[in-house]
Each structure stands twice: as structure tokens, then as C-alpha cells.
Length: 269
Image 1 (tube, rainbow, N blue to C red):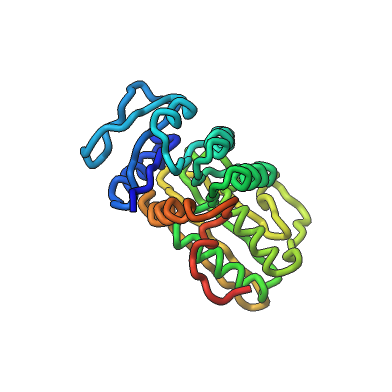
Image 2 (image 1 turned 135 degrees about the vertical axis):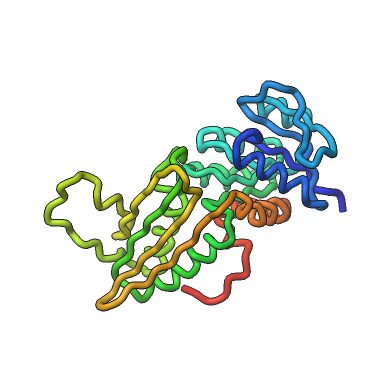
């Protein structure tokens, strides 16, 4: 079987560099090109030193030159939806790990993928531990009336709350079948102290130098609490999930949302 040809969009970013290195390490994948708006060279030397691949500032020209089978995007939401439109219309599979895509964006990606007979994988988080935490949170949601989420990220993260926190809260409410109980605050002396809320789940965002990414889900009941927590120590933790998505997306038609769809998670709601 021929190796899956991969182009990384946003290749010069922190996640893009990590994805590029991971693709180079896998014998079933082949890095054929890279795109980044900040590119100043026309070639990118791969981290393993094996070869250089074309590096472009423009995805359209990159697709024509490199002819990838899969485009992996870790840019920003606005760039990701534009990249998805361009790639899917050309019959190229996409894997997107960007936060901030709307429901309308996801519906459009699904329609374009089906119309062009290819797959699209979008995940709010590619860390396997984070996916397992979300699965456990959905199970616990059936047994508790109160829940809050604290998500902690590095100070340069663009959005708040994180896409993972939003997806976790939404999944918990769906699994519970009704909103959680959100305690009313009689007096909020500092606006925003209680955070935002999704279906009665309060979400608190921490942005701090020194952090990578963490999520803590706290459930409360009379006389007890249950805490689930996942900590990201390096971007390397996302790579097994990204590689799995690349290999699976070429076998699919239409949108697959969430890495949990590719994992054999037993039990739960």
C-alpha cells in the first residue's frame, strides 16, 4: 500500500511543526508539502533530514504542486474553514484540530465532504487522555446535578473558553438529558467571576504563562465531589490522535466529529 500523502497547513506554527515531525516518523505516511502564511522560503527541510518539501504561503498553489491525499490543519478557525472548502472541493480529505468552528461551519464541511466523496475529521482535542476524560464525564453526568469546568491554557491561546471545554460541557448536558443546576449568585462583586455557562455547567478559563493545557471537571452532590482532570505536558500528546485521524479519514465519507468516534470506548450513556 502506498504511503498516504500529507500536506500540513500552518506548518510553521507550534502544532504544525509537531505534526510535521510525527508524520515523518510514521512509515505509512509521507509528508509532501507544507503551507504557512509566514513562509519566507520555498522549501521546508523535514525534521528527520530526509528531504525538503515545497513550502508555500498559499494553500491553493500548494495543493496544485503537491497533490496531497490529506490536508492537516492546525491554524485558526477562519483559515481552517477556508482551507477545508478549498481542499474538499478538490476531493482532498481534511483533518482539522482548530478551535472555534461553528455549527454552520461543521455542517458545511460535512456537506462538502459528502458531495466530493471524501472524509473530514474535526476534533476539539486530539489528546487521547482528554477524549477519555470526556467519556468519563458523560458517564458521571447522569448521576450529578451540579458540575463546573476549569480549563487552563498557556497565555497565548487565542480563544476562551477552549473548544474542548465547550464540547465537554455540551456532551455532559446531552448525556444527562437536561441542564445541570446552576446556583444563582446573590451578589457578584466582580463581573464575570462565575465564568460563562453551558446548560448549567459553569466554565472558568485560566490563561497563564507556564501552562500548556489542562481541563478539570468537578461534579458536586450532597456531602461529596468527584473530580476528573487531564493535564497536557507537551504537544507530543496530541500526535497519536492526529496520526490515527489521518489514517482513518481516507476511509470515510463525510464529517467525523471528535476523536472518540474513532476509539472503541465501551460503556457510558
